Amino acid sequence: MTTEKAPVRVFLVDDHALFRAGVRAELDSITAEVDVVGEAGSVAEAVVGIGHLKPDVVLLDVHMPDGGGAEVLRQVRTALPDVVFLALSVSDAAEDVIAVIRAGARGYVTKTISSQELVRAVVRVSDGDAVFSPRLAGFVLDAFADRPGAAPISDPELDLLTPRERDVLRLLARGYAYKEIASELFISVKTVETHVSSVLRKTQLSNRYELSRWASDRRLV
Image (cartoon, rainbow, N blue to C red):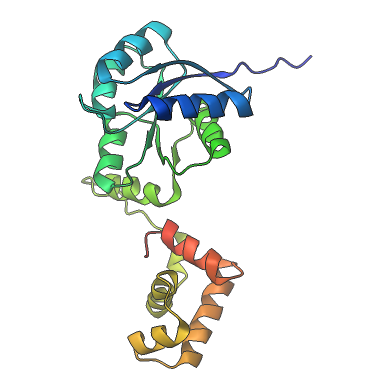
């Protein structure tokens, strides 16, 4: 007999009541995998609420008037090491991502995330995974790669591209037309087409839109 997995108990921390209400309503309506057990609109309320309810996952805003997500982590994480924190923020600034991850958050997603994607992120961090919105992962890798003695972070797929192919891809992802790319790089339109075909083949992608997203995820844009 299979035992049904208990829902992930979630605590929301955000200083905007309307946003908290929206997230709670969305999560409660679309899945039984998560259960929103509490919420807070300030650091002080969050510390008390998390300590009392001991949720599995805290969805944590990064910027709040009285200190923000990093301050909540500082006050709670040592006493409650089993509670997992997932930053949910409007900010995609590198310094915000790095600060909250160094403070102890397990992941960082932006508020553009869909409800279904947020559920998956909550479940994944609860299971022990680290979760980031695609373009944010590079900030974390770069930050930790900068530590003394750290191994350089490489991307095997990106390493397949030549420097000129990267130049073409970067401009393509920025919305340049083939003719504009040719002018910018002082090459022919035919050569641009050849490079794009090569990049598509190496990345196993099928169109310009997919290439743009691929480049953005790897912070080439």
